[in-house]
Image (cartoon, rainbow, N blue to C red):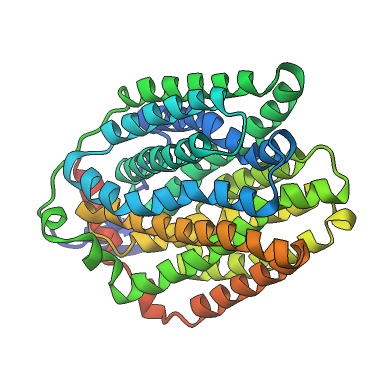
Length: 422
């Protein structure tokens, strides 16, 4: 088709190429009915999962666990996640997403019921944490990958941000309700309630529409080939280092606060979740507009200040420190995650999402496990200094990433054409 005449704003005759008009077509909406159902289901599961962010308090108060034990019990779930991630990434690319999500929610429900018989730190507790790490990975990787499948390519960063915002919102609701409920009705009631939520999520997962298509690329490309791509390797290293920082803050702020004399610790999680949710929804499209690498670097620089703020927790307070973490993590995580997905073809998204979450969980596991022993040898401020230094090193690595490393494996125009033709 040739060039066609049209009037500009000054009523002058000009010509426009119709090919350029199609390039300016409106971006498809993100919040479709099936995306909304996916978000609702993620929220139900998130309520169950987020309650266990209060596990360090349960271990310290109810089971009299020390810092090393708290770190080890917390981290073992993420160790299980690290080992299962390669399997999950490959299988959901081959066989679809939602049935693995249903399996994860079901296992998590039974693990929650197992806490009814926990009365001391022992084998049962370790097994349950392993099951929770395995099941969370099954659910989260499957559902977050499905979220990228059903979202327009132009809104990929926003889709990851909104999905994460829903999960993060439960980080406020779950622990707050659990802390109040444990005081009123006891911990067994809380564990039973989380089992019910996870069971409901397992059922709802089956009703999430999915049109899984096998891609030849998924069959040809191994997980190892995906994670060893030059640009992606650097992104995964940064994710691991950020996971280390996140572990130091999230695992040890509770025993540190209790040591300082705080009695209620959920205000940190509430502030964190609210700020992360607002930043992911309000700023969710920022990385798509300004560039994912640029936004991730800016947010990571803010991230550096969080562990140092914990050193002066008695002055700054739980609420402000939690809000700072929420703002930094809420912008950084989806931007870097979307950058990782950019390196994957359509048939490799499961592997890309799994490898990114696996790298972050490696950092979380190692940070939670090792820093607990550092606390026993030194004190809590020492591990927060180490975490801050690790985060700054991650910023240096990300800042040295060449601009070409932020390029996409597939062009946005290809994805836009794909969605317009469906």
